[in-house]
Length: 255
Image 1 (tube, helix red, strand yellow):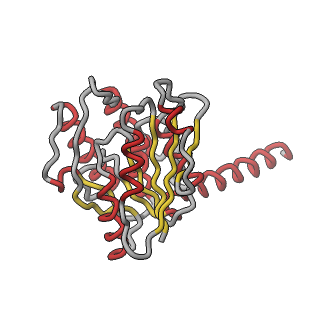
Image 2: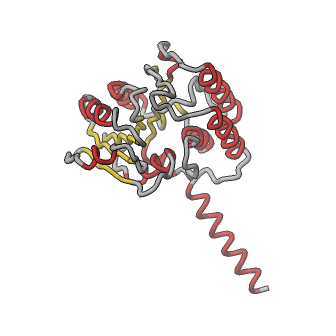
Image 3: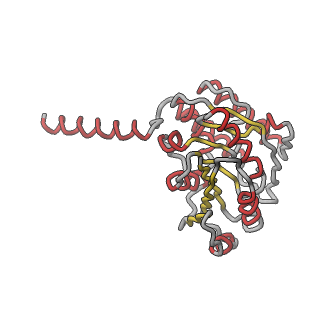
């Protein structure tokens, strides 16, 4: 098995090298190989200069030529991954790469389509802000009600998904909302999401935390959009819809 670790970064010069080093240091267990895909979202603080110095066959660095949003960075990683599974690793040290091995063990046990790390199940999560805690609780409840999930922490950044599943999804969001569109469409496509406990060491806004209350409100709108079917769940559905539109338009022209 091969794991594609997708690390998205924007202005993370104080943490990016440490996160990459810690990711490389993890022994994923027997039968597992790894590639690390770092996607820089047009950083301006010196992060790009650090990444330009990397010369390691295990690490592939992709530079966006403008700030396209975290969601677009994840989608870039998905499009270029060559592994059997992908896992999202934030570049800000809130989530510990050492726990990747636990995800791989869960795959070995279950062959699951998707495994999310739950800060709630981890039992050691300390949230710096009350709105962050209650926001995640609300969004998790909405996910379970609207999409039939059984999750405890939909907002977790550490998400592992099998390659054939994630590459089949019609992912459209470009910002933090991809964290919610992804589980929406995994569940809508008929796959189960398992959870395992993870640790969490949150940053403050002074330390560079970027998510706000406004992002939570946008996440709710994304969930409602997906539940009401305003975007196709699978890429195949988009192609079929486009084909049907072409056929319909051709028939109208003949008439």
